[in-house]
Length: 115
Length: 111
Image (cartoon, rainbow over all chains, first blue to last red; front, side, top):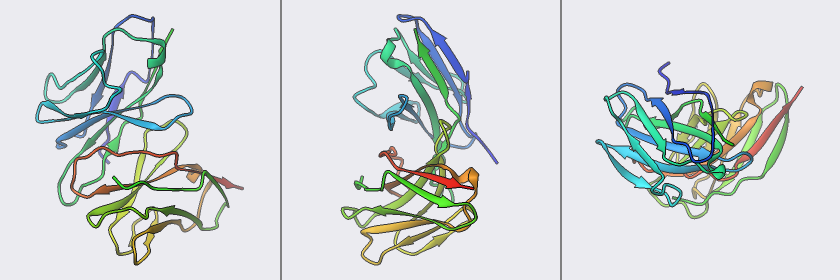
């Protein structure tokens, strides 16, 4: 079964440092998403991406965050200057949008710890 | 997206059916009911979705009331591996809109 792959599985970074979280979506999917989940809290939407541009973003997705799909396969989330409160699980998801495939597939997540 | 209401937790004996309810009284005519689950802190996993007819796949069955104000996810023979948080989400099918996760139902399957 096709799957969404995220790397690294765990990232520890110092406050103020930049981090890049990487995702390889399912190959024929067209819509890509990042979600995050702070420990013990709900899964929260961050951003959606289609046709090489952001289609929707949440209030959480401020100027510290950016996304790109640099090479047509990888989909990355960059946090420019991490804060302690950015510590969370970050999930990438992709969606195919065919009539047979309307469910989003999630990766296993990257646990980001900011110290 | 429709607001959904689920009980915070449920227990089920291994091998028995687990019936997880969801209220979605404000769901609109074009919104489907999607179910996902999250095991530990893994990525959410799609289970099933439906509009108004009952649906069944290899994982579960989905029963939607005729007025579409509520639904029940049925895991026919729950196993310990089904212990997870189950999310009921209203979303238009074929739409690329985000999923809005609530707190879900923590299902614990007991031996």
